[in-house]
Length: 239
Length: 299
Image (cartoon, rainbow over all chains, first blue to last red; front, side):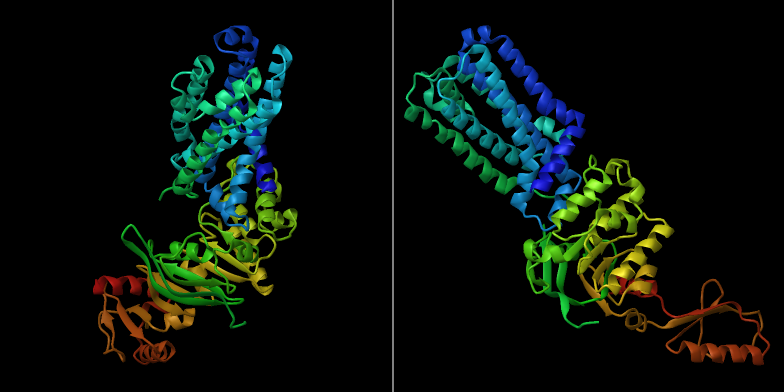
């Protein structure tokens, strides 16, 4: 797994397009949110900014890169090549996804640290960490499922739009309007409960037990995504 | 050569989308053998190979490789090298990185520089795969298949796209691997290579074997041919001959040496010149054509 991950990391840094979409763009958008934090805090809260930067990195850095990587490796038969070796399927997938995941986690950690330095530390760092990890797992699951529907890296530019724009839109909606109204709908939408969790963790004022319940919908999306991926994911291009 | 089967296939069937790609196929490959799966396009060679390699699941039947299921990658893959029909390398990795990665994943040990040297890619070690020619990619593919000198090597059309020198070099490596005891399973469209190199051949057509055996066994099923042209007036021929549309004569025979001798003696006795004389044993491509035409005549 580790040797696949190392080769994948090399490829990310050699491919300018992937580098820009997975590293530069999310950082640039996040930097804008932090720079304009007073305006965005007035619109929602500091927790809302934290949720937005997390989902920007999760959607464009992690999810899109995961789908593009898997579609590309399948299209050029690299997945088949890897399966010609003694490596197991789980190890191959983990190796392919690990670099983008680690990069996304590092990005989120750095960006949220900068936000904390600029605006003050979050109320509950552990809860925030749990929210970030749950979101990352959900985005990976959705990435695997979407990769099953994606034939090529070019096709990924279309197939990733619903989820990537969808979760950012949900995060924005929940972060700005809260969950007093349409509570169930907002929490069940992908990214809805994770946004509320981040907002609670950053702003404070909500009991930890009440917040932890919000992990359930996020992890349910992981189960749905993995179930979809099991049915949809292909190791070789369609003949 | 040991008689222990490295590959044991029994009553193999593969159907997809209503198409019966492989039909009741049974064969064995013995240790140290070079076994060729040959056939027309769409005969089911690659499907069969993919099942034996563990890339595909059969609809029914049994496949054992080293006595294990080929799907059990942990048990089987460290002992086998696979040269795919199509490249399957990441374009952004260099040649050296590709061999190192795939070599490491095979769980065999070898020296990357040695492997690159035997496929003549040392000068290209730092070149990205995207910048290689088609032939160089095939050699890279071959390098990953032979990394660590596996006991069993699958070569799916290994010489397609290679120049003559590279082909010869590749076969030299294969010969060396066989000396070291490796078993080779080959598919190729170059029948001459198969005729020269293989121990046994499975000749596939429409999903099943139409012939199986050594080159000699396969070619003995068809008569050899003697072709020649004659001057306008000649005495009666000593052997039964067919007149072809271009005016030449054809003698089909299972006793080539005897009949050729008879014909030459007759020509000498009657001072007849046998023009454009050609005589030779049955070639594999004759058998190949016969299988195709048999199928046409029975369908």
